[in-house]
Image 1 (cartoon, rainbow, N blue to C red):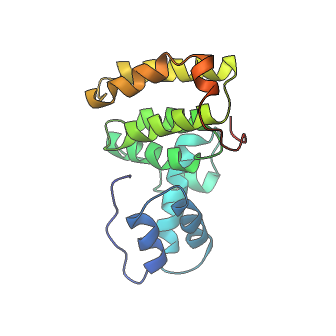
Image 2: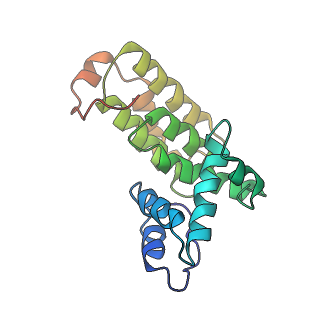
Image 3: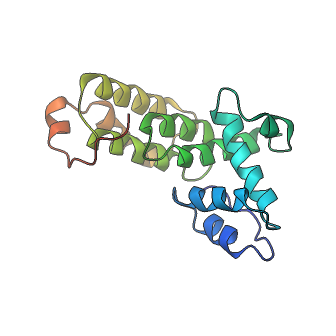
Length: 174
């Protein structure tokens, strides 16, 4: 979970989304951002932070606003949010953003979960190669937590035969 923001007065929907942050929280945040409540500006700031680190050319409003991360921690937090924004649509983008979010607590677990989900989407040679490369990347990451080493080593060496035995999810993401 990304680091929590302080609760906003009168923003129960936004506060709930931020407190129990899961990929579906972004839908609530975007809904609040599209509105005109006193919470909309914070929600727009969060949506823009995601855009600034994940879109090649973010909305000009976002590029000009205070949404541009000002320091390393804000950049990591923005990548953490961007990882969740890609959840279920592009597993490798999730991993890439989660790696950029490290050493934020939980970022490595998000990357590992995305690698596992990717394998449940299919076992093609290109996908396995991508999983192996990203698992190796996580193992070499300076902030890698050693307790995840066995899991990442397993992902880095998974074979097509083992992959085919994994439960299959909807084959909708990259």
